Length: 285
Image (cartoon, rainbow, N blue to C red; front, side):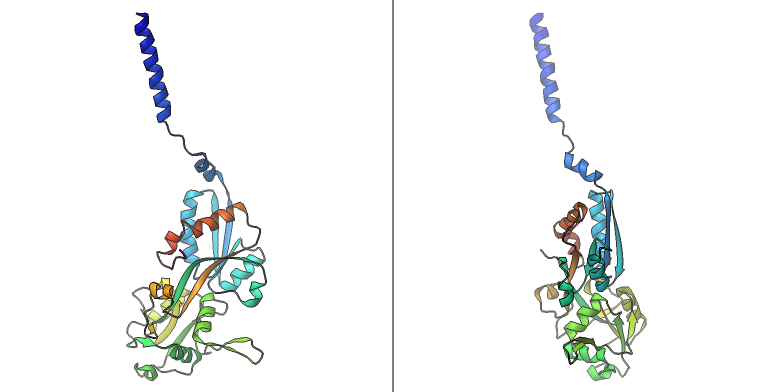
């Protein structure tokens, strides 16, 4: 009888050990992640804004106690906001200017983007050269018949001054000229309809049959038609390999001393976040 009781006790003890071994504890790092709290403010390029919102939504699934506020204002605002510590992260959709490089900001290239030249779908023009784009946006060419289209006056649609999209576009296409002292002058025609956002440019082109504008390649949809540039389609792959000439970087800018939550977010964007980037833009990986 004693032997039977002994074996029963051994059996129960063994089952208990096995049961304990089979239990999985929640990783302490997951628990600590959910308790990290704080606020991140991102300000700047309206072209990067939708991407920032997507990145923030996924990041907050891992860190629900970290709030992220995303503001627009243009790339120049992004640089200034980061430098003046108005925002934790500045967003710029253009390369930094020489004076901006002297500020000592940390630059993270989070993606690349192409800028599509768009017209109304009813427009029969299919292809333009960089020189023709320059002449259209400076007002030298003002009728579609001059480049093989209908006899209609061209309505130029542009972004506001300070926009990273505009800055990149005028520089790449030659719409930006230099003065006698070497300074830069934006020669966009004064007759251009100036719009404050990518969406506003697109909507104007949709509603104006003879219009031409430019938008982030990631914002293209079936409501507008993108023109070939120098015979090359405005596609992500062509922008990535460099055959499509009108392309630019997407930057996040921070001060040298980054807080823990800023480092967490930047690390996420540069790694796991690239899966989100490549859904609409060009991943850096």
